[in-house]
Image (cartoon, rainbow, N blue to C red; front, top):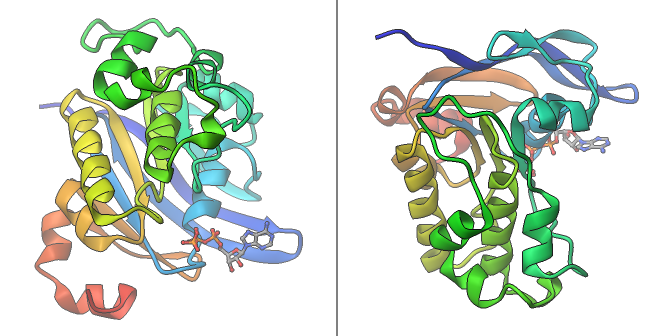
Length: 241
Ligand SMILES: Nc1ncnc2c1ncn2[C@@H]1O[C@H](COP(=O)(O)OP(=O)(O)OP(=O)(O)O)[C@@H](O)[C@H]1O
């Protein structure tokens, strides 16, 4: 079976002003797989996602999307090339309705035929709750509903690679489980995903591959199975769970 590299991040250095935050960060996502990016508070997970999205320009290193270099391109160009982001803290457009949040994000993409395009109806099939609330202002939704909307909005861009930044953050356990089931469903449909999380259990349940970032440097890469069988690494890099 041939393996296609969907997204590759290689030897990235990134700064906020003079503050050197990412130190030679490298990881890779294979097509159709889920890569979990774990790390403690302030480790550099969001900065890695911001660098992929073009919000932050790396000073060194390369980023490729299905082999094409994208580092240094503008965020909207990177989004059009096919990377979708579910941002940390949801960041839905609070003064727009649910339906408007979804339709403004719509982006058609020529598919290879193996995966159907995302449409409003298809998002509503995955998230019936959003259909029920489609005319409501998004700022009035619960945290869980806003998370579903943030995921639906990213899907409307028909991303080739989906980045999810701490989708379980601040959600009650029941909603974390629901978000987990949604992510599993997307993965089963062939979506390539990078899942950034502090929730180790959720990540190990969903991920094929895992990278751990620690103070801006990659401390572990391997399969989820390898990490599960290595509690010493989990304890040392992430704290006990
Ligand atoms: N806009 C910014 N300006 C300066 N420093 C920043 C900025 N954003 C983050 N940092 C710093 O960069 C480092 C990495 O932060 P980052 O947000 O990437 O971590 P994280 O792993 O996503 O953490 P969390 O789980 O808390 O979101 C931290 O030391 C943080 O204080």
